[in-house]
Length: 413
Ligand SMILES: *Cc1c(COP(=O)(O)O)cnc(C)c1O
Image (cartoon, rainbow, N blue to C red):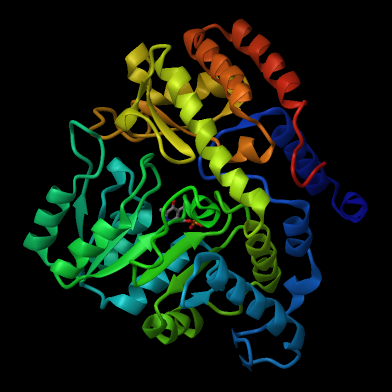
């Protein structure tokens, strides 16, 4: 980054400090990950200079002969990786992929059924402060109070009563395996379309560690930067009959020129995700979160829904008398980055919460294994037990940094 150092030392410094942070801290935000150097190289390439409104072979600008190839590769690889009929790789983010999905499946004012935010749904699944809640009539569903898992009988009743045009199967904070086939049965039985939003789990789906929604849903959306380890952005997979509608919902309806640097980086990530290494990676992520859940629950914390089948666990910190916000800041003081998160039927407001969400995808990208998770679990427990002792927390922070230094940082090493 010698050019940046010369031209803008302030931004250079920010990036250098962020490198240090990503090296020293334990990144356990469930939606974050480390991309490979190859993905970073494509993201930082001159493809960012190119305007290419339209789609490969049908552009509004001249000079697209190179980006036509990279975008076509991204599309073909996405289809082959996920065994999908059609793919769109232009959405700038997961939220925009969802917006395009709604635009291609619904009219404004239609009824859509999705997981409520406080049970683990996403803002784009009907929050009042989001376009989704403003343009559509959302009917929420939640998890069962006893099991903290999806309750398909309850879902069926809600669907039967409200006759939604669309049902969304997708979650930001749900740790268990999702049975997309059951969602499809419910959608079919009430004449609804099905959108699977696999933003969090797409890397697990690509590697085979989680069942795929692709055969069941009319449209599948995903971010590319969470477990999939690609650049910041999104992709959508769909049945052939939605291809035209979805493409025009993205452009010209919602976005302008696509980000070709990001699309090329998505192509790189999809290729990486086809490898044997990535398959092993996806299974290792789940092994790591299972061992973490086991170790935390054996030491007094309560794991929501009784465990995890994914990269994510929700932890009820009230079990040891701490709210989510205090748990988050204690962990941050010792160099462990997680986020506070509402747990189902939470009594605390969203800025406080009764729990934290922990993810293992980023640490698994640093090649951490089960034995390392046991050490991480010790760091977490020690920090939470000593949440009001800043001296102990800063000594844990030093231990965390020297532990962390033993592992590679993809993109930096
Ligand atoms: C992260 C996420 C999104 C949105 O992705 P952005 O790229 O942040 O817009 C959408 N849906 C779900 C389920 C998510 O977890």
